[in-house]
Amino acid sequence: MKSIRIVSVFLTIALSASLTVSAFGARTVTDVKKEQAESQRQLEAAEEEASDIEGEKSLTEEELEENKEQLAQIIASVEIIEDEIKDKNKAVEEAEEQYKAAKKKEKSQYKAMKRRIKYIYEHGGSTGNPYAEFFSGATDFADILNRSAYAEEIYEYDRNLLNEYQEARKRVKESEEKLQNELDELNEIKATYEEESAVLEKTIEEQQAKVDNFDEQLASARARASQYKNKIAAQNAEIKRIVEAEEKAAAEKKKAEEAKKKAEAEAKKKAEAEARKKKEQKEESKEEEGEDEEQEYAPEDEGEYEEYEEDEKEEETSSEGGSGTGSEIAAYAQRFLGNPYVAGGTSLTDGTDCSGFTQSVYAHFGYSIPRTSWEQQSAGRSVSYSDAQPGDIFCYSGHVGIYIGNNTICHASTPETGIKLTPATYRDIVTIRRIV
Image 1: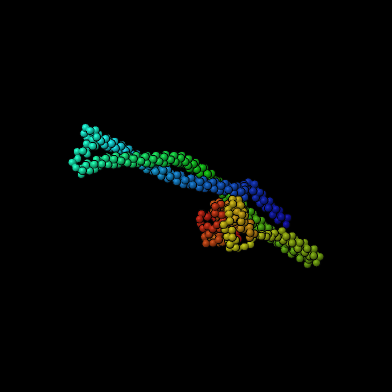
Image 2: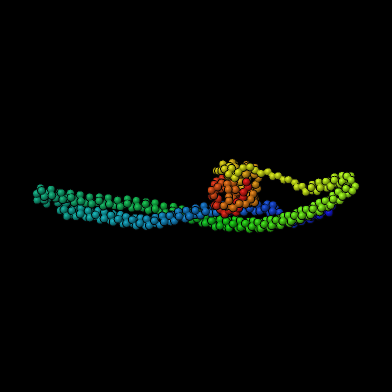
């Protein structure tokens, strides 16, 4: 018995020493996953920053295009007005020429009328009364009336013609003034357009510089996101190495335990053989010496077996989990559709993020799952897409949601959309986890 205990103790000490060296020689998966959770948070922050920059850039580019279009319209309007100004200048010049011609004709007619009047006076006779002479030359009364009518016609003709020229000069002058006013208005509109054009050109220049700056910021954010992705990939590789090491250690532990059980079984078999042999010897001795020696051996023998059986007992373990089916979990998750998304939040009514949403829904049914989306990728057990059932957690890069069936997930999406339904394959699926 003493030799069996020594072997068992030796194996236990050797196994413990091996596990202790392994534990102190490398970091644990939990340590790396904590660092990875921080890397994932930084990656999500960098991707969110890149998304915000892209949104601002897109909005600025739209405004830039609108301003360019407006500038093009103003430039076209200026060109049209310049053509109108040319036409208007030409019309003003023509009006000025017409005015000069009308004024010249009026002046010419006025001189002609003065010459006719002067001629009548100069050739009317010696009496000094040319009109008397003009009428005295009449042969009869009818001739006098004819002469009188003729003189009146000459006067009326000259007066009408003079009035006509004066009226024409007046109309031309008014037209010239009107054209000049229109020309002044066109020049004023042109000046306004040119001012607007200058302002728009400056705005376009500033917006273009802003877009170029967005490109630099976006490149920086994407570079940081790439660094965090590489870091996460390296941490995944480290986790894989640790898991492989732990699996190897577990295999060695299992092997050691099996060796221990085998040694104990062999020792037990040997002890039983020795016990049987001892019992046979005692029975033989009993036959020879009587009942006393058999009674002395029996308790010792029985106690020996009881002691060994006590060493072989194993402790019972129990675990407690939540309650509720996957369908119940999926139905409960949909109660909160439309509620807000809040980064870092866990309230199903006041605001939650994607992993806070899944954690809080499962907590309602008594299930405890990790807080971050990255840690939830290792929760429960993995299932394939073809075997997915309502209540399963669909995991994406930096995001999680609860499957409700029909290729649909319920998830806390973005600050703009909150908790909503989305096709399950809208992004590449990293893994699907079953908690229930």
